[in-house]
Image (tube, rainbow, N blue to C red; front, side, top):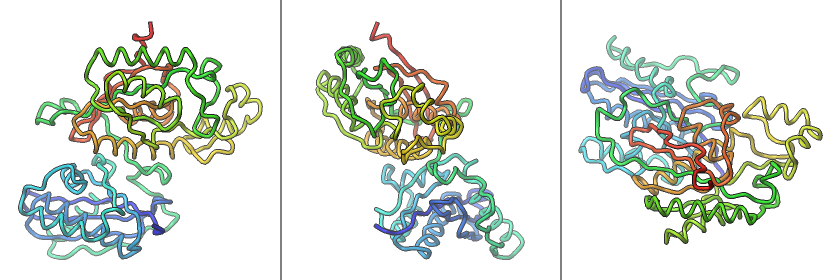
Length: 387
């Protein structure tokens, strides 16, 4: 597939539910984040959900007109629409079925990915929906204003190179009003030590891919014992790196489970810093290291990855695991950077929070994900099984 990449943000609203309704949608360039198309319409008397689906359809059509071969990331604050279009929830309401079917025909399913975002991250589509409803109230249809120029600042979206939405912090009393079902639990296990770990050397996905040391194998066995005693893990997913696969296999063999490999869980590529200590990297590449510590968009010397690009692929891996193992407890075996990123996203913390977490070899963390899009950190850097 050679098409461009677009981000579609869509929303719909009804003043009365049902009542006077309208939708809004924007299409962003996937590389720059700039708005390149807008759509909105007053649709008369309808429900919120109908308006949301019509906003989705309008956004997809606008993207298809720009490039029918484009890869499209759809982002909406409607959990219902996102889950139904992703195929994880059944479409029971008769008004929704034809709309979902229409949305599915705009672009091939393989070109479209759906993600939930909190409402505050969907401000542009929400604004357009309200403009459409205001126009309808005044007896006219919405008309587009001047489209933002390429130099105009983008509001209400993530940085262009960190396109995945980040979960909002849990709301007060957020689990009480409704039955959210069984959460999906990620038990996050960092791999055991390698020969590079005690020396605190950079060891990413672009280096020598070291195996576990003798101590690392011992740590993996202790983790396996502890997880077997808990008896809650139902699936095991691992980074493709040797040290994570060895750690995952030690647990999986104890639990009688297979290990599924997820490429997105690999460690950051540290480029020319691979195998160096922090002091050695500081001595050899002082400017690059300072830039890297000061910005999530900076990359290690010679690397193609920043923390923002890592956030993108880790977030994608997270969503794939959530879709496959909904409502289950999954052991996710990975590395320092991906695990810290999953924890950071669960907390809704800023990128520099990565530097404020300690994550020991073979330590355990746990995050629970709920059907309304919220996440809850339940455990961080537990090493009690190693004492």
